[in-house]
Image (cartoon, helix red, strand yellow):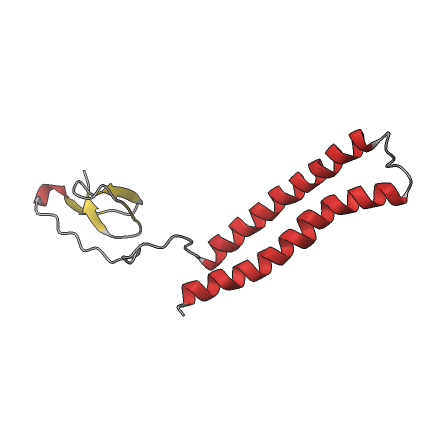
Length: 128
């Protein structure tokens, strides 16, 4: 099993439990505690059902943001491609009027593949 697969399985273990405890637990706490306090009766269900759903939606949005932050932090690819996404690209500029050393970052789009590449630092690129 690869490192990427292990990261995804670990993420599923953590965030499945978080979904149940935080999201469902938050909505269920509103629903149940309103009954414990005697606030939820057959006449007030119309108010407490959407209130519990609203709280559940807020906690679900929070859960999604936590999941997204974890995916970015751990650099997890949920749908990995077959090729290595980070490959070293050597570019040779043949037009001597266009060569130079530039400090500012730039984006190069390959005319063949249409893939955008970010070039940063003191890399050689076409400058005017």
